[in-house]
Length: 113
Length: 114
Image 1 (tube, rainbow over the protein chains, first blue to last red):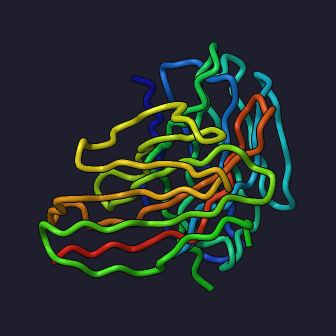
Image 2: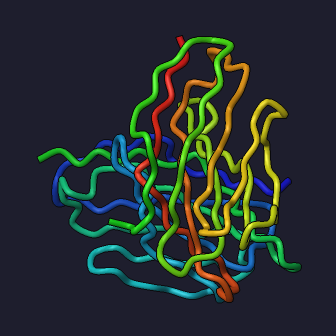
C-alpha cells in the first residue's frame, strides 16, 4: 500500500507570510498532483508534476517534485486569505496501468487577514 | 465549476436504509471515480469505472456497489446503512488517454445516517 504523509496537518498564519507544506512517501510515484479543497466543496486540481526535480509555478504557488519522485512540496509566497483551504497531495502509482490515486490526509491552511 | 455534477447535494436517512448517489462526468470523460471523505480517514478511493466497466477497486465495503451506464453517468448504491457511513461522497472524472490521470471532482453528496 502506497501512503502519502502530509505535514503540517494544520497551519494558521497571517496574511503576507510565506509557508511550505510537504508531502512525503517511501514509494515512487509516476506523477503527483496537488488539490485545494474548500469547506463543503470538491477538491480542485492545482497542478500535476511528472518529472523528478520538476518545479511548477502557479502565481504565488510553487510546486516541486522530489528528484526520486517520492516527495513534493508546495510553497506559497505572501499568503492571502483566499489561499485558505485544505491542500491535498495525490500520487499515481509507478508502473502498470493502475489509475488509482492515493491521497494524503491534507494540510488545513488558514490565512488570517 | 469542474463540469462534474452530483445529486443530491445532501441526503439524510436512517440506519438500515439504502440510498443511491448519482454522478455525471465531464463531457467526453470516460472514467468515473468514487471517493468517501470523512474527518478521520481523509479522502478514500472506493471504485473506478471506465467506459462502463469496473477498472479499479479500493476500500469499498460489500454493502456498497456502483455502476456506470451507457451514457457514462454513474451511480453509487449504499445499503444497510450504518452511522459510520455518514461522510462526504465525491465523484470525479478523467479524460481517456491521459497517462497521469488528472481527476476533476464534483461538489459532493453529504450523507448523514441517523
